[in-house]
Amino acid sequence: MFGVTHPLALLLLPLALLPFVCHGQRAVPHPAPDLLPTDGLSTLLDWGLRAVAACAVLAMTLGMAGVYRAEEKIERIGQGAQVVMLIDSSGSMDRPYVTGNKGTSRVPVWGTYRSKGQIARELLAQYAARRPQDMFALFVFSSNPIAVLPLTEKQDAIQAAIAAGMIERGLATTDLAAGIVQSLEYFRDQAFTGSRVMLLLSDGSATLTLPMQDRIRNLLEKYRVSLYWLYMRDQHSPGLTPGRNGATAPEQQVHEFFSNMGLPYRAYSAEDPSALKEAIAEVDKLQNLPIRYQDIVPRTDLAAWCYGAALAGLVVVLLARLAEVEAWA
Image (cartoon, rainbow, N blue to C red; front, side, top):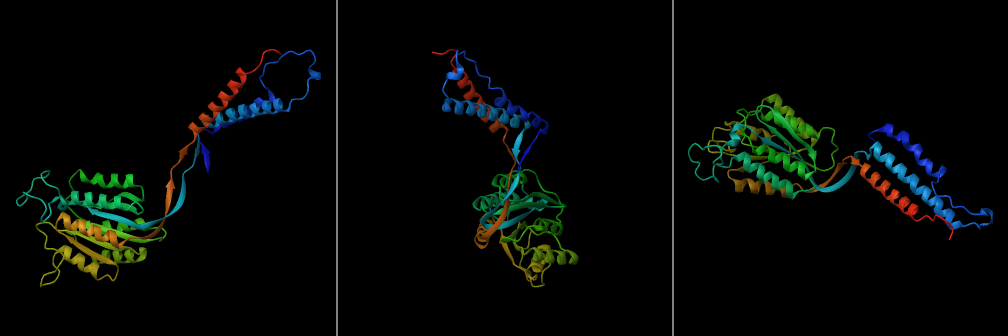
């Protein structure tokens, strides 16, 4: 579908008829024009030049009107999944891993080590780059969830969104429930055309109330989403495995709820960068199915092409003008 930016310029379109009314050629005197034989080639050339001039005027008018091809959606079929990356951006993600950072056995100084959040985003960027057929969305959460990027297969946008979170430090609180619920809404009104994945990267220092548990379970089942939790433990975290007295730590309670949902769920405990890399590679192997999605082709400005066509037509007319004879030989 096509459109114009300045529709009033289309009022000049009738000017394209002028070459058919006024030829603009030099008149060469001849004593007996009626005796001249009919020249079919000259007549064809005459009307051809008129048509070229008319097209040049038409193209110039469309260029001034700002003609463009409108945005459109194209259905594509790829190999991969629809992946929502839900990243914990709370202050606890600014801490170092249990291992993998030298010189951080005491209180670390920000900027002297690579935090869990920074390493996680670097590995996520590599994961997304390896899967150009996937559609990725990005959501971050701390005290409030923030939608960063809707589902898209545009790698430039995906990489920029991931890199944008590597700069500043996180906030103090963690609202995991709101982050999961709102990120799952990315699948609302999306046709189920392939594998769906929620990739949760968090150290789990949050709790889920019973009403929120029911809502999370219902949304995961409604949208048919597989949940993968990449749990990044720091020095002060007890891990996901409960002790003898059962699940007591917040992350252990969250893991127990996810495990008992009866829905597709896997947890990976990543205590160092290499373990996190292995966990992401495992997810990479598990989710690689055919996927159908809508690709948005952005609006295309065609004014430059119109001006180019007008210039080409004017050059042809000018050359014809220079080749005209001024007198009979």
